[in-house]
Picture (spheres, one colour):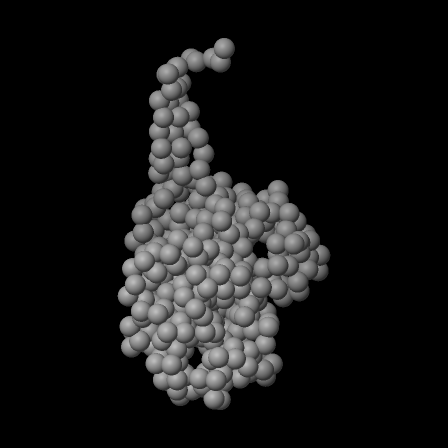
Length: 418
C-alpha cells in the first residue's frame, strides 16, 4: 500500500468537501447531526461489540485500569455520545457571526466575520468517544475533519466512523467532509503532517510524547494540548471538609483523564488538621501517595517523592503531596511544575483567592471547585476537541468558536486608495 497516496487522497477529498460544507446552513447541519446521533443509538450493539475487541487486546497488553476505563464503551456511554451530538445541535452556530464592524472615513465598511477554519486534522489516543465528539463539533463549525485514532481503540473508532459516515449520506453535509485514517502505522501520521496544502490545523489529543512528536514533525499549525499536571492548593483558610470533598473528587472520580488532580499542595497551617484524614480517605480508594519530607512525616505510610514526580502526569491513582508556606509559594510551585492546564485553590480568604487567580499561569484557574470541571460540556460549550494549553488562537476547552477563524469583508462604492 502506498501510504502517501492514500492519505493525500483523503486530504484532497476533505479540502474539496470543506469548501462545500462552508456554505451549508445551520438548519441543514443540525439535521445531519441529528441523523448521526440516531445512527449511534440504532447501531450501538455493533459499536460495543467492536469495542470489546479493543478491551480484550488492551487487557492482554497490560493497559492500566484507568486506561481501560478510558477505552471502554457500554450502552450508557454510547448513549452519552449520541446525547453529546444532540447538545452540539442546540448550540448557536458561530459561522457568519459579525464580530465587529467599522465604518471608515472614506465610506468603506469593514466587517470581521466568523468563518470555518477549513480542514481540521485530529490525532488522538484511547478514548473512542473522541471520534463522535470531534466529528460533530468540526462539522457543526463548518469544517471537514480527518480523524486518526490510536491503535488501542482501532476497532471501536472504525465502527463509530462507519456509523457516522453512513448517516451523512443523503444530507446536505458532503460525506467526504468526514475522513478517518484506519492505518495504525505511524507513517500515516507523518504523511498527514506534511499536507499543509490541504489541511489547515492539526489538533493532537493524547500523551505528551504524541503531542511533542506532532509539534516537532508538522508543517501544519498545531494547537497543542500538553499533559494535564493539575494542582489543588488547600489554603491556610480552607474549609477542611470542602477541601476533602473537592480533592477526593478531583483525584478519584476519574483518574485517567487530563483534568484530574495530579498534585496536592497543602498549606502548613492546615496540614496537621487536613492531611492525615485526607490520606486515610485516599488510602481507602487505593490511591498511592508520594510526598515531600514534611508530608511523609505527617502520613507515615506515604512514599517519598522523587524529583521527577513533581512534573509527572500519572493518569492513575497516584498523587504527589507537598507542604507549602502560603499562596505565593504555592503559585511559584505550580508555575514551575504545572502544565498550564487547570489548577485550583481551596480557601475562604478572598485576597488569597484573587492572588491565585491572577498569578497562576494556566488556561483554567478555580476557586473552591474541582479541576474536573475543565470540560467542554461543563463549560456550556458542548463537546470539545481538546483542552488547549497554548496561548494563541484558543486556550482551554476548544469548542465550536475555537474551531473557527475569521475573514474581513469590505463593502465600498467605488473607493480607490490615494
